[in-house]
Length: 402
Ligand SMILES: [Zn+2]
Image 1 (spheres, rainbow, N blue to C red):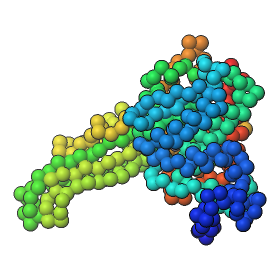
Image 2: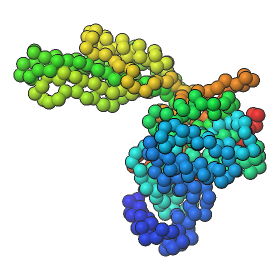
Image 3: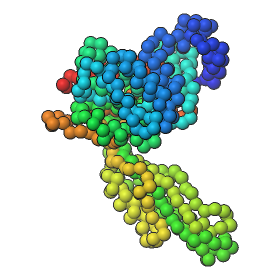
């Protein structure tokens, strides 16, 4: 995106609350493209309401009101004070079998909605926080569902828009253990996948590495015990655990398990022998279970430190881990890919069906994960519109299985 076009648009937006009607760019101005489409206008409306995790209330209210106005029965499921999930089904279909879901929270900071002047309508670029992750998915899911309900008003569908996906999934976990979590035969998750069906994503394991020492004057280091000296061999070993034969496993589907030592906190000053060191580690698992990975990490720390009891991996203080998540890709006409990011998929426990039919789970949505958490988060109108069609096809295939 060119900075000067952004400046021009901000100037236009500042000059008039309704730039589409007064814009010197005329009838093909980007704003008029948005205004002319109920779908793109809804996407704009929900992007313009900030919803950084913890502050989802207002966008939740907006979406709930929109669905109620379109003949959905809407449940606001409390997650904590002022925060709720939205669960909605067509008023004429109270036993949903297909769940279509995404998340209404975004990462910080809020970034203004902004449309750049297109060469043609489909290439119009819509920028702003949440345009991709995941309000593009939400808008496309809702409009695909509305399309389907026009010809099949009793289609057994439910929509679920949760809070808290970006910080551990408290919204989805609340839904998962509630009675609204029924034995659906199909669950469609919306996240940025570049319009590909995702055949799975890696698992996750978080932990800390902690070393305790004994502070002393740095001129007399033999009077203390350096927690940093103690932790270093453990960290160098952990750093390579995805790259060595006896380390964390790889798989043909997901490639290597990767390790990120994302934060280290140790010591107080250059002239003090450090009494404490701690590191925060995130592992993306390509194979195996979190418990197997914990054993490998424990053994690696013990081996690298010669069994030093002052250095250890602490798993209790970090979020629950989960194994790689395999997903379904049996609907024709989509590119297929794997992704490396985490989603709410593992937070939604699948309820087995009495008829023994397999439960299918899909992950699909517009926009690229590569911009999703960046200050350049943006998506094209063409991708958003393709996603409406993509969700329509996924829901259509699920309805055919009834
Ligand atoms: Zn997301």
